[in-house]
Every structure is written in C-alpha cells, then in structure tokens.
Length: 306
Ligand code: NDG
Image (tube, rainbow, N blue to C red; front, side, top):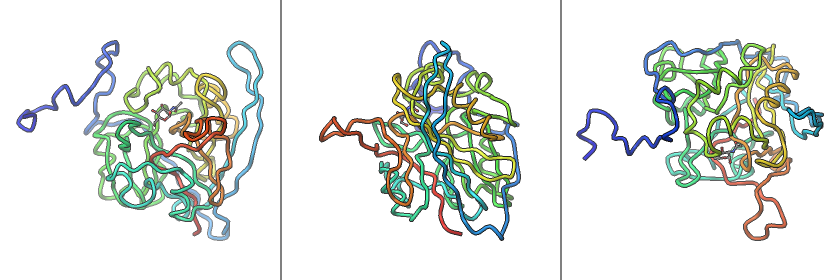
C-alpha cells in the first residue's frame, strides 16, 4: 500500500528511461525564476479586447517560405476581463471533463476564448497549475513548466514557480495556467533555455525536443509592453503544417510580446469568437473524416465583459 511509503511510489511517476534524472524535479521552496509585470489598467477603455487576423510569411530552417495563418487578441484591463476557465465551467477539472472551447466559451459568455492547459488524453485530467477567478483548482507540486498568471494586486507573473510561489496567501493568484516552453522572456526568445529546464511529461507529442521542433498548430498567452494580456494562435497540423516553437517565439517577439508561454496546441488549438469557432482545427471529425472538428479539450482562456 503506497499510502505508507514516505515517498511517492515509482509507478506514480512514469519516466522515459532516456531522460536525464534532472528533468521534472519538483521545486517546493526554491527561488524559481520568473518575470513580473504590472497588468494594464485604464478605466477609460471599456472595450475588453481587440482581435486581429494575420497571414504571415515564416522562413523555416531550410530557407523555405511558408504562410502562417492566425489570430492575435489584445486584452485591456485583464484583471477584470480575463479568466482561466475549467472545461464546461465549474468543477470541469475535478470531473475530468473535456469540452470544446466553443462549449466552454458559451457556458461563460466569452467574447474571445482559446484553448489553454494541457491534459491527459487518456483520463481527461487537467495538467499543471490552475487557478480560475481566485479559486485554486490544482497545483503541479512544483514541477517545472512555464506558467502565466495574474496575482490579486494586478501583477502578471510569467515563468517558473516553486510550489510555495503558487500557494502564496498574501497576494494570491487570481488566474493561473501552465503551458510547456517559455517562448519569450523579457523581450528575447527563450526556447533554448526552457527546453533544457522544463518537464516533458505535460505533453504527449514526444520528447521535449520533438515537441519544440515539430511544426504544428500553436496557441500562446503573454503580455505586451503596456501590460495587456495577448493571445496568439497559428493554425497547423502536427508534422505537416504550422510552425515549430522557434518560429512561433520569433513571431511573438516581433509582435512585441514581452513575455509569452506556449499553451496546448495541435488538434487542441482552437479560437472561438463570440461563441463560434474561427480557426481551422486539425483533427478529423469522428463521424466523417472529410471534415475537421474542434477537439474536446481541457481549460480555456476567456475574455469577458468588465
Ligand atoms: C495536443 C498537443 C499534445 C498534448 C495534447 C493534449 C501540441 C503540438 O494536445 O502535446 O499532449 O494536451 O501541442 N500537441 O495534441
């Protein structure tokens, strides 16, 4: 009975044998590295967000030029207009629910919603740290992956967090989500550093290097120089279309993001505008593979009225 063991049993911690032991070590009390930035606040601005569409040329590692199609959303007054939401609403993670972003967006009446956290595709379990509207849902136990959050006083926090950082009571997180790969740190591409630091277990695409190097559909959350929260999505399909994380980070940096993390992507990448899907999801529909269907996923990011 592993209840009696002083340490978690090894069965609970499936690890790929080729991986160095250094990976996925929890940081409970340490000084995990992250950036902080004051969130935008301007009561004269009443529109919660603006969404733009882009088609951008991306030059790949073989000097081939391809097109990147996506959405760019800038969120004003994020402390009041931006929420991390559970799949289908309250208790979605406890119930291991999986819902389309469309469904989650309709439940909360979001102007804009995108997919957010990674999940276990077998059990539906939400992965990583999660705080929604001040409600603490779960924490990753100090396992190191890239986080994006807003604390009660309006401080945006991006990067790595010890468990103590996550649980801090004096200025608690009101929104918090975990991605995989800190793409842009303080205005610079941070992929090379984050790929050696982060835990690969959050995602199911393969090794962290494959996850970074494969082209796919991608979703990111970050902030600009004014502390506005920014959502960026690029369409694609794993191994076939879209961008790798070097290309994605480079594009985000050029868009002026100061810090940004990579969220769930591939077939999970979904953009919903006023309740309807606005991107081209990559999963084939179960009932008829000639069509593409938005995947039932885990958490979402939601822009709502003030
Ligand atoms: C997507 C992810 C995969 C993840 C799964 C569930 C990409 C390229 O969703 O890694 O395990 O979260 O982000 N693929 O398929």
